[in-house]
Length: 423
Length: 59
Image (cartoon, rainbow over all chains, first blue to last red; front, side, top):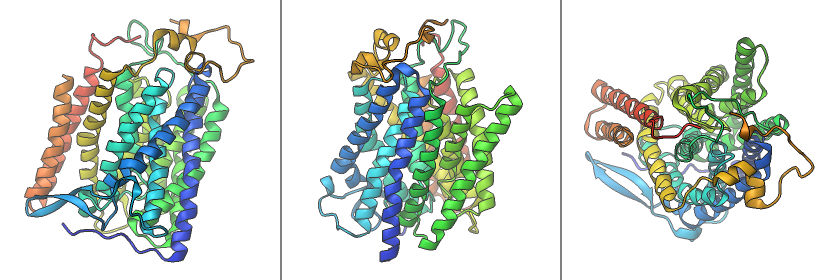
């Protein structure tokens, strides 16, 4: 397989890329708000603090080891000789970002990596909401930012074997969203459902989020952040010209809008009313799904990608809960893993390139399911054996705000109908 | 069942790698990749089902 080189960026493109990267924290803030809003009121401060802490841990671990293992196209890497070809499987850069060329392509890629890993780290918090200890979340993030994320990021973005096969993931639908979503799935399996979620017959009960306004505000912020994420990712890793940034923004917006409208129509038709939290999930699912192909699909294809992502977001939430007993309060598995996988497949089918990279996309999907899922589950399972990840029964009953932080998010707010006691 | 599921997931991925490394580009390579995805789908179903076993508390 041919070794890849980092695309050359002009000064203007590098400046545009830098500005776009600075928007990415809006996506992280948006997800944190969505997770907090979809959780219960007595865990709201804990949810936001967890997001802040895992972002900090992720950035530091990525700085220490993750960036070295992710590496960049054209930089030293370990390769395995198999079938007469060199399979570039992990970066061989310096730890602690030593030797980084300041102001060059590699420093922009490192900055993008720091922002991206913070975003990945927030995704599993949605699925572990209301029962995941703060310390356990941080420990799990060490594994995510130090092992799982850099490994797949190297394969897809760092000149690794998937990139050499022609795998396209401009905005991180696979590298960021599916990796985060599969980690979220592992966390739901390891933690188990919230108390009171399933009755003795295994039927789920609704535990609605406590603040729809936070959730919808998170969607607005996420939109801004994803515009930066998709634009910067495409410029850095797909090597598209700066003029393509407009198409990327158009595709991102169209996919999010069509996904949210699709969910609004489905929930209206099924339940007689439009469901705000599901619409928010649909909006983010559209942003996620179009990420892989945002720079290589036409706007009409982005609308199709968004519509199907919305459909998947609604039905996969329900299906996972009803048939597989997955309790995912923030919808992270459906929104990030399911929609991200759809986005990767759709890029192979709908890319405006003949022939589309569909076989490489299938290989990427198989790698995420066959390698990353067992890896992230195994690492978190071991972590759970060393130290229990789930909060104690008393903590779940009292609320994580009081139990772990000593103060609630809304000290003046009283409730007289504790959902914990509903059976 | 859980371990079998994860083994099937990993096995499917290895089939994909083998197909890409050892087979020439063409119909046989595509067939192997599709079959491997089928193996992974089976593995994923088993892992999902294994988390519903009676030993796992559903509260």
